[in-house]
Length: 496
Image (cartoon, rainbow, N blue to C red; front, side):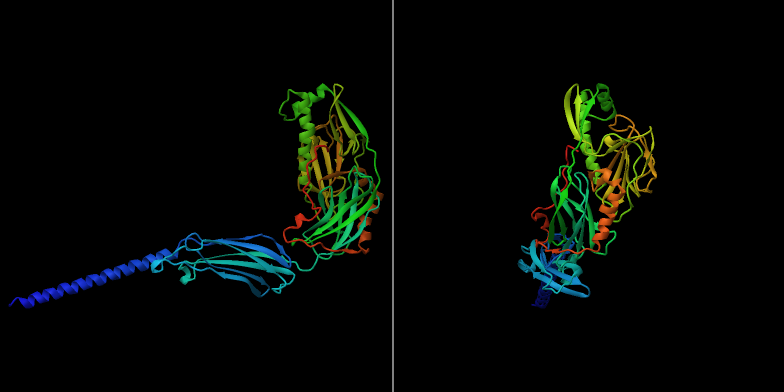
């Protein structure tokens, strides 16, 4: 009986220890649960998003698509706003529901969304000018004080609400097959692109050197096959998708191109096979055709590329200077190539061949900038000068080059010396005139009267002329290329 109080005391101690153990176990479990929830909902990856299309100009109504995702916590919210000046206006705000598991753990979250929306510029009160489109996304992680991880992007753009207007002013009246044409026109505001569409190629217009702001000139090639009445399209397109067109008709004086028979000797074919890198040098005819056809085509593609960008102002003044020499092959000559009495090829000669004393100094036709000064396949050592407004001159078969790419060259300065490099049968200069990559008749450019009346005088007169504006054709933003008669990339022609 004396030991009973001690037994009860021991039992109470065990009971307290048991309760303490249970409390500690519960506390530990809660700590583990809280840590598990925190770690599980913090996540380690930012959400991602993209915006399509990435355009630089929008009209009254422009469609967009936002794609966003988060691979662990899931998407919580997507927001789009537009800012212009000091004002920011919300375009959309979308919150996505959550699917939570037991004890607040993550369930099956939305990990990717696609959100289409329409930017109604007028409804939002936007004005013509610069604006910024803001896109934001948040995930469901507990980071940033339970706000979630955040990602954003912005798109700088021009709002284009005022319709583009085009006014045709004039076209030069003296046009020849294979020559150069000049069209003058006026735009109500800057366009994404404008110029003359002919032969599936859009030739770029430039600010009128003699006119006020908003007036343009475009120099374009007249097809060598044109005769009688010809037509081109004057085109202006805004980046938002609207397009304006005006069909221009004019008279073209036809030309009868010379027929030239080129008899090829075996020695010459051997020289060609030895000079150029060809696949089968032992087959003389195949080697020659590889050079005269394929290499010629590649060289013309390179010329188009070099002449695709030009100074936006005139660097030249007056007629182009001509090398004093005897004219040999002429521009537009239709050459038939014969070997052992059999025709093996035909090509069109795209320049004027001038023969003088051997290694004669070659003068620059006019003031310009050298954009090429290196070997050019069949043309040998070649210099190309940019004279502005898409006008280029080319000097080929040189024995030496006296300028470097990037040099500013004055009219009459020596660019090199005549020679027989490339696919040449003797010392001479091959001189070409080029409009944005297309060869045109050089003879016009040597004529001071043609320059005064058909070039400088043309855009000077246009600066004071009037015309009827052409209405714009509506097109969906980003879909201008689907308009009827769209401009297509220049295609390589095997016969040049």
